[in-house]
Length: 412
Ligand code: ADP
Ligand code: ASP
Ligand code: MG
Image 1 (cartoon, rainbow, N blue to C red):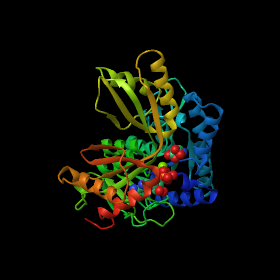
Image 2: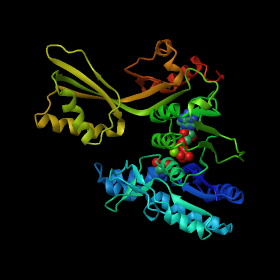
Image 3: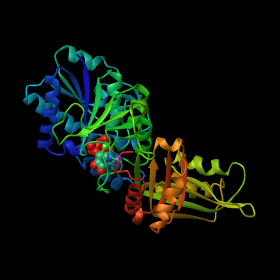
């Protein structure tokens, strides 16, 4: 039997009625003759609630217990989906990560998948099971502890299963009907893309477009998984949604494919650190060991052997960063005058493979922001993207102005 992977995100399983609607979609694919692997998220809002409980209980929590708590939301939806399918006379059962087993490394709260043995599920398919409902986002470490794959990780579970089971396609059902030129929630004129290149989707995801988890796009690219994003709220045809595919399959595209944003960033500046060999390592190794995800880095011009070092990180990691820097100062590894945290910034990025061959995108971006009176605090660029940090209150305006200026509502 050909295998299909269908993933339903939090809003698509937010109530029993929505799980029933999703199960109906699964029934349609079973009727076509597929063995189906369904990956479910926790009900909308559930994971946030669980994370909140952990943070309230223990601000610098033990990540193993964090995983034990936050993975539980998916267990509920997996069991409920299996029950509903059984009520529909579709032979189905639920699988938690450890039962598959979905094996990961031991990096709790951001674990990477190492292996998905297919025997247990395949044995059940051979015995007549038609649907394996797998709890997304979770796995088991070599030590036998429950792990999670990072927020949005059910997308990655889905793609990894599609690769392991050589599925015909991996369909990601969500609350929008595909990948848009930017988040349709903040730009009405955002346009749905029929296709998007893996490289562009990878950048958009890593720059904040949470419609797919970054790691899921990486895996799909590496294993050649046909990845589709579509709505769980509409009746779907076989070519609905957006196909994420190799760039060769895309005939026409704009220089800029999309605009992404990350709302909750912080800009940290170490004032007056010694400008000497090894200073960057002395700062960023402790930050990394403290679990701080540093993104942009700018080292200022040095004066009389001292310099300022600026970096950005997620706003909820500011406390960890401050502690890591205070500890490094106390132990004499670094010396600085002050650590300033600007917790009211956001990152806005434009992405497109067309930038490889077209110049002037950065200049245009800066001009657009300047015309809106938006001050740019930090800039980074790579081959196919340009990112800026701006005051959070201007984030929506920046996204909309860039979407307009690059005419993303029109097909290139
Ligand atoms: P799920 O719970 O199904 O995993 P997510 O909330 O994680 O859904 O992702 C879907 C959301 O991603 C959409 O509701 C939309 O607001 C947001 N989003 C951000 N950027 C984009 C984009 N470029 N295209 C489509 N959706 C986007
Ligand atoms: N429930 C998890 C989260 O909200 C995983 C997911 O939905 O992909 O991050
Ligand atoms: Mg998601």
